Length: 448
Ligand SMILES: Nc1nc2c(ncn2[C@@H]2O[C@H](COP(=O)(O)OP(=O)(O)OP(=O)(O)O)[C@@H](O)[C@H]2O)c(=O)[nH]1
Ligand SMILES: [Mg+2]
Image (cartoon, rainbow, N blue to C red; front, side):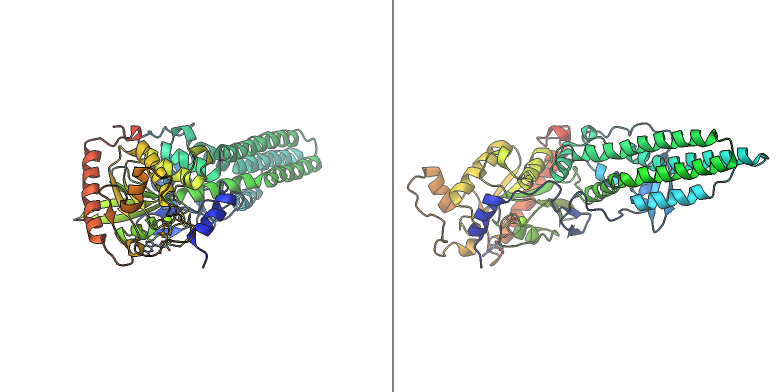
């Protein structure tokens, strides 16, 4: 079996996750892991029409082919601003239809459009029908796109946590770029549609009107097909965002933090309903997972996070940045996990440096330290992990042996210390609840 330290050094040398490839976990009572995602991968539909109806006001919806829906906003210009104190914008995103469905539905509806009744002149009738059909196809294609562009929130109106999720998932500017491409396609459709409808309306014979109609329809279809992946990319963005973990800022949240592979997810599994993947390699956890704990009828949230390495923020991968975004923007109590065995692949000395850094930055959070894997503590030193204390100062030497002051020592294998941990976690979350009720969350975003 490859040791944690070997794999860890491989990862350090060569692996930085690309934007858009984070696997994210969601929770709404249940947890599950999404498959890896890449921006141009286009599939999937999403939430139900009923959900849509509940959440989009002043809109009419239409269910088309196996539950796809799109909505026309009535008289809306820009989405009302979400207040910065709220999260949950991703659950309100509109349903985006696959581009193929938009096109086939638009063509079907267009074909059925007849000339206005009572036009006796054949050429006039054909002109009238042609212009109407071209206008209809243009609108059927462009109106859903307009609705999408208006309904997806502008990043600047989002809660900073959700803003970070967008940035870290899709990369800098990609979200805006996807929306811009949809809007550009919409504008192009309007331009081409209007031009060809006008040409058709000027035809002097039935034959010319027929030719101009067929030319215009073909051109509109071509324009749409050329850029249709903009719509499918948007559908994919909506699907990924909707699957992001749902956090309730009013409910106390325990956030598991520590270096990679130290046992965070194993503890989440023991403490909550969350069932994150547990493996003996770093960065097993590749997104934020929300689990839940109910203690004495009180409901709490637990988030598992990707591990943090000893390095400067500029060098951090997106998974680490995700962890920092949670700490920065969500009112969490921290359960910091230390693995003094070195089995995780990060030496205790390095873990100490990471710990000091995080404690220095987020020490205003309610905090509990846990030393994990105590069942392994008596075992001989792991290969590659130096036990030479030669260059260490007293704090590090003390940390290597005892961990932080007041840490709870636990093992998920033997369950040693687990009941004490549960009781301390309960006290911590009760204190966090009091902080939330008093509006004292140490977060600008909480309005405290
Ligand atoms: N012996 C022993 N092994 C443990 C204990 N807790 C966790 N492990 C093992 O340590 C490895 C890493 O555990 P995880 O819970 O995935 O660690 P993590 O911190 O979530 O790791 P990342 O998500 O990669 O950051 C797994 O092989 C676990 O089985 C423990 O108390 N005792
Ligand atoms: Mg994990």
